Amino acid sequence: MNMLIRWFTTALAIFLLTYLWDGIKVDSFTTALIAALVLGLMNAIVRPVLVLLTLPLTVLSIGLFLLVINGTLLYLVAYLIHGFDIDGFVNAVIASIAIWAVGLLLNVFFKRD
Image 1 (cartoon, helix red, strand yellow):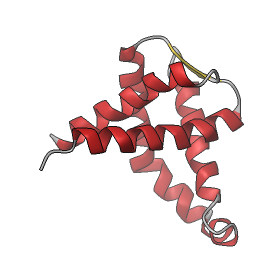
Image 2 (tube, one colour; image 1 turned 45 degrees about the vertical axis):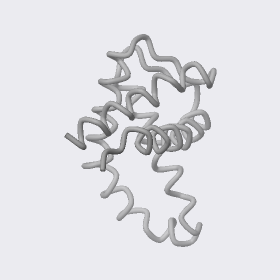
Image 3 (cartoon, helix red, strand yellow; image 1 turned 30 degrees about the vertical axis):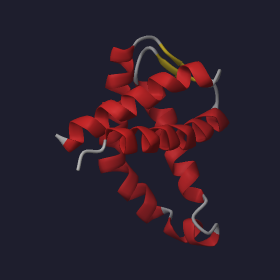
Image 4 (cartoon, helix red, strand yellow; image 1 turned 120 degrees about the vertical axis):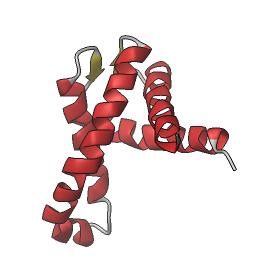
């Protein structure tokens, strides 16, 4: 159940971000659900490999390179999903930070004891 709530909150964060940021466009909430699912799969499968491969660069940048990895994955998801568009890589990095922040707030709101 927790995984479904997290998936829904990520999709809601992506959908809400379209109204807050001009660099992201999502056609519908269904597209946001699909994008959140693909992003979750990418974060579970591809992200650990990228983090391991770029570990020296991440250490040298004091962890800031993880923002580049997150932006890259979000940009890749936008490339793969029809109806989910991000205008440029910098917007993808900023959007990944915003999705994290909005998702964090929504997870706190929906958290059950």
